[in-house]
Length: 331
Image (cartoon, rainbow, N blue to C red; front, top):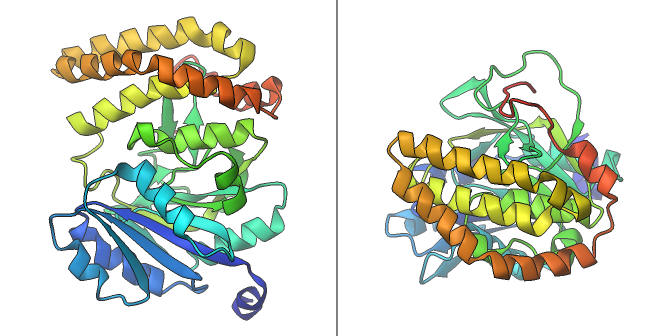
């Protein structure tokens, strides 16, 4: 089976964007070296790390190191690598430095792509690196309020066989994209810097007519926010909540934007109150202030995105999560 895939599978470029990920990189790259299907190339963007990341990467001569003189963020880092990828690569696989792929990760994604020609984006099953019996995510969910989360995050990982299924978008910590699709939608939005940029990309790909399949056999052990202080750090909170607003404004199509806008505003107000009570009032207010300051830019982007929309509004509506209590660990 592996021999046949190696002979017939299209070329894949694996992209890793790193910033001070020294404590994860050796395990991440060693796992890539152990893949049953070897990627055509591996490009690692290092955003001016101040730790020993570069020295670790140099232990893996097959990895193409692109060192930058400043931290450009996850979004721009990936865009640089996508543009630099070999022209023969039909697929781009994204992998975080704190994500450790099981040996058949890439093979399974390519098999899914071959078997499901109606899909152009494929998401991996993420389990907690510290405890693989705990699920880290089974695809990204977009709620009608504009809230986003990883499906099943923190729940017990399923012990029975799972079937591949369509999800709204993949978590870019470990995902496979058709390169031509990424180029068509101009890749990641670099204004986002990091956090929620993968959901925005997934939304724009959906609007352009592309679909995402969750592939449960493509397993990756994920630390999560390994270099940014954790999911509840001020850094993560600021970028996540600012970008949450921008994603809704840019991407929610047509009548759905106006229909769901009151709910989105309510979500933002509740977030401010809730996080203020947790002692993070200053950072959440700064995030929402900067989100508002960027609205004119995002509205201009919206006009271009919606002008090119191919997906029917009904198709988008069917994929939105509509639960009254949005966050759920159900998979």
